[in-house]
Image (cartoon, rainbow over all chains, first blue to last red; front, side):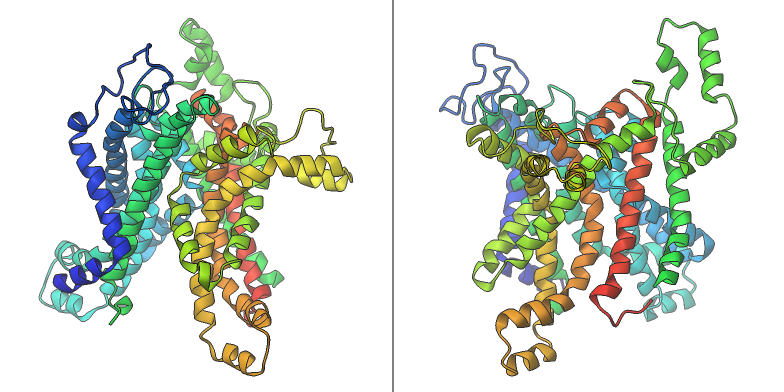
Length: 278
Length: 325
C-alpha cells in the first residue's frame, strides 16, 4: 500500500515541488548559522537601509541588520510555529474528536457544541482573545493558533471515528474483548491517520500565515526576533525609501506556505484511491 | 420559509450562549487583577478594594456572569477603561468599516472566479494556490506601494478624505453616501476601499475560484447541459442560465464559511491602510487590557459570522427552488 501511495505521490509534480520547498526550508533552518553571512540581530548603524547588493544580498533594515540573514534564521521560527501550532491543535482536536465520537451521548454533544461555538469566531480574533489571556509573545501566539485550529481536527476526527467504529474489524476487536483504549488507539486512530496527516500539512501553511499576521500586529514575536511577520511590519515605514525590507519576508512567507499547500494537496490525492489516474 | 428562519434563530440561542460563556471565562482567566492594573503600582490597597467593588469583581463568578449576560443581551458591555466611552459605541463605530471591507471583497472573489475559461484555467488555478499562500497584509502592502505611493491612482490611507463631508446615519460610509445622495463621498469612499478590497479579495478569490471550478466542471457533465447544448443554446446561455445557477450551492456555502476568515483578514488589511476599523481597536484594547471593549468586539464579530451563515443557509432555497424548508 505504501509503495502505491509513494508511486502516486512522485507522479504529482506539484507535490514534488512542495516537498522540495519544505526540504529546502528545513535545511535552511538546520544550517542557519552556516548559511547566514551575518548575525541576524546585530545592529550595524553604518549599514542602515542599504539596497540589495553583493555584500547584502537582500539589503539591510533600519538598524543595518542583513535581511537575508534574518530571513534564513526566520525559517526556524516559521517551522517552529507550524510544528508547535499543529501539535497543540492536533493534541486538543484528537482528544475532543475521539471522545465525542467514541462515547457520543450528552458528553459528545456538549463537546461538539463547544466546537461549533469556537468555529463561530474568526480565527485571528479567537487567537487574539487567547493572546489576551496568555500575553503577547512568539510561543503564546503559537499556542493560540493551535487552540484556534483544534476544532477543525475535532470535527474531522469525529466524522472519521463515527464511520470507522461501525466497521467489521472494530466489531471483531470488541468481540475479542479488546478494551476501549485499545480499540481507540490501535484500531480507530491508526485507520484515521491518513486524512489527519493531510489536514496537518494544510494547517501548517495556514499556521505560518496566522503566526506572521500576529507578528505583524505586534502580538506575536517581539523585536529583535527575526520572525517574518514582525520583519514585514518593520518595513511598513520604509515602503518608498526601502521597499526591500517589506518585500523579501513576504516572498519567504508565500513560498513556504505554498510549499505546505502543494504538499498537502498532493498527499490528499495520493492517499485517496478514488483520485488515482490510470 | 419563515418557520425555518424562526427555527434557525432559536437554534442560534445555545451557540450565542456558548459564545458569551467563552468570552466571559476567557476574560476572567486573564492573569492579574484588573483593578490593580487600572490603578497602577502606586495606588493603595484601599483604592483597589473600592474599585474591585465598583466593577463588581468581588462578587461570585456566577453572579458576575449573570450580570455580564444581562448586559450582553441589551448590548451594554460597560465603558472602556482607556477612553471611558461606552464600549459598544466604540465597536459600533469601527465595525461598519471592517464589515464594509469584507463585503467588498466577496464580489471581487466571485467575479475573478466566474471570469475563468479553459485557456487561462491553469494560470488561474496557479493564481488561486498562490492567493491562499499570500499573507493578506503583504498583498496589501505591495498594492499600496505600487498603486498609492508610486502611481498615485488611489488614496494612501483611511476610509474617507479629510475634505469630503458625509452625514453619518448608519456608520456604513458607502450606504450613508447613497442614502444622502452624496455622489462625491460615494466615489471617494469607493476609491479608498478598492485597494484593501482587492487585497482582501485575494483570499476569498482563491477559495471561491477553486470551489467554483470544481462545482462548475461537475455540473457541466450533467445530462441537462447536454440537452441544452443539443437544443442549440449559445454556450454563454448554457453556462449562465443552466450551469452557473446549479453550481452556486457549494460556492455560496464557501462564501459563508469564508466570512470569518475575511473578517480576520480585514483586521490585518485595515491595519496596513490605517482604516478606523475593528483591527486597530482590537490590538490596542488587547494590549491595554481594555476588557469591556474586547468583550463587545468579540461578541459582535461572532454574531456577524453566525448571522451571515444563517443568511447563506436561507439563500439555498432561492438558489435551488427544489430545496424547501
